[in-house]
Amino acid sequence: MSKTQYTYAVARIRALEASLFSSSTIEQLLACKDEAACLRFLQEKGWGGTDTPQSADAILTKEREKIWENIRGMGVDMDVFAVLSYPNVFHNLKAAVKAVYTGKENLPVFYKDGLIEKNEMLRALKDRDYGALPKMMREAAQEAMETLMHSGDGQLCDVIIDRACMDAMLAAGQSAKDSVIRDYAESTIAVTNIKIAVRAAKTGKSIEFMKRAMAPCREINIEKLMTAALGGMDAVIEYLEHHGYGEAALSLRDSLSAFERWCDNRIIQAMKPQKMNAFSVGPLVAYVIARENEIKTVRIILTCKQNGLPEEAIRERIREMYV
Image (cartoon, rainbow, N blue to C red; front, side, top):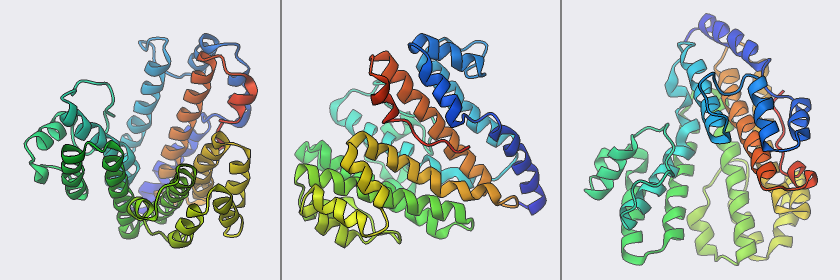
């Protein structure tokens, strides 16, 4: 796209950003007494549609659809946004491998948006026609399928596919012309590696497990991170404190919920500088990530309200807003 076309698209994004939830809007949602009141508040803010049922799933699904309706309506190159769908695409691969293994193919565990349609993915796996899958997942699909069939080890199956997702994101970032894709890929992989180290430290996973699960990236030295994880949670926290991830260390000292919140906040913080790039795809990609983060935060609040969690527990889980 030309700079002129991006200027037009970014101008439209600026208008859409005005309707993003701010921290004060999230406070208003949090103040609603129950889930029903939250849903009414969301509808008053324009969430959902005139024919959308008053349910959390229906409203949030509609909002995700709106994201891509808006982006497609700008006439931009949609290939730029493909990397944002990789987590969902590889989630679908995990679901499909397990569906073929168990014979339970109709469970509502698949995302609708993806590079390959659900039934075609299931067919390819059942027929062992791995060449019909996107190139970036063929090898992992075959290995995960064979692993699950021979050992029944669902966790190893997940590790194989999750690592393939990380590798695909890194490859997309390294080949991208736009810095926003590189920044998003690097930040996401760094955060994912830290998550793996935390899980490994808590459950006593081996160095072999971590080598299989982690992906090399520019932001973090995974060899040192793996060594720290072998020493337990205190060693991971100490490593993070001394290698530029002090906020992550603080969140871990607080709780795992606070740590999960930091993980998402780190991605949003990496995207905020894109607001200033008026002549690139950066603001558009950042907007998509911001909207996904907003919807995730609203889902967390609704789920907590539904389960009667106290306000303090909900606040611990609320993500940082883009605006």
